[in-house]
Amino acid sequence: MTDRRDELAANLAKVEERITAACAAAGRKREEVTLIVVTKTYPASDVRMLAELGVRHVAENRDQDAAPKAAECADLALSWHFVGQLQTNKVRSVVGYADVVQSVDRARLVTALSKEAERTGRQLGCLIQVALDAGVSGPGERGGVAPGGIGELADLVAAAPGLRLDGLMTVAPLTGEYAGRQLEAFGRLMDLSTDLRRAHPAANMVSAGMSADLEQAVAAGATHVRVGTAVLGVRPRLG
Image (cartoon, rainbow, N blue to C red; front, side):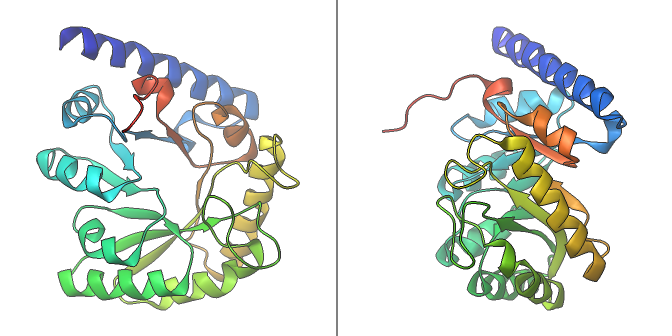
C-alpha cells in the first residue's frame, strides 16, 4: 500500500502545481480554488490515503458505490459531494452521506431532497447543474437544466426546507456551440453565476473543470474543480 500512497501523493502534487500555476496565470489566489477529488470506481482504502495526504473534499457519481464507501470512511473529516445524475429513488441513501449534491436539475428532485433532509435533520448544500448543450428548455446529454431554467429552480432550492443553495455546476459539453471550447463554456457559467447571485448572493460556488480542463475552469473563475483521473489514475473498466 506504500507504493499506492506514494503514487497518490505524487499525482496530488502534480495537480496542486497545475492549480497553483493556473491561479497565478489568472491573477487569482490559490486559496480561491478548492480541489474535489473524484473517487468513483476506486476503493475506500484510496479515500483513506487521500485524507491522510490532506484531501478534504471527495466526490462520487453512483450511489451504489458511494454509500458503502462513505460508511467505511465515516470516521474521516471529509466533505462528500454527489456529482452524478440522481434518481429520486436514491435520494434517501444519498442524503445519508452527501454534504453537497452538485447535480440538482429538476423540481421533483428538489422536493425529494428537501423531504429527506428535513426528515433526517440535515442541511444539504445544492448546486444547480447547468446544461450548456441544452436548448431553450429540456435537459442536456449529461443531465442539467438549460440556462433559462436556472432562476426558477434556484428559487425552489432556496425556499426548500433543509436545502441550501450553494451555486452552479457544469460539465464541459460534448455537443452544441460550446463543444471543444471549454474556456468559453466555463466563462458562460460564470456569467450565469453572476446573474444568480443578484437574487441569491450567498450562492457563490462555481464547480467546473476536470482533469483535462481544470486550467480553463480556473481561468474562467471556478471556485471548485473536480479531478479524478489526474489524481487516481486511469479508471478500470466496469463490467
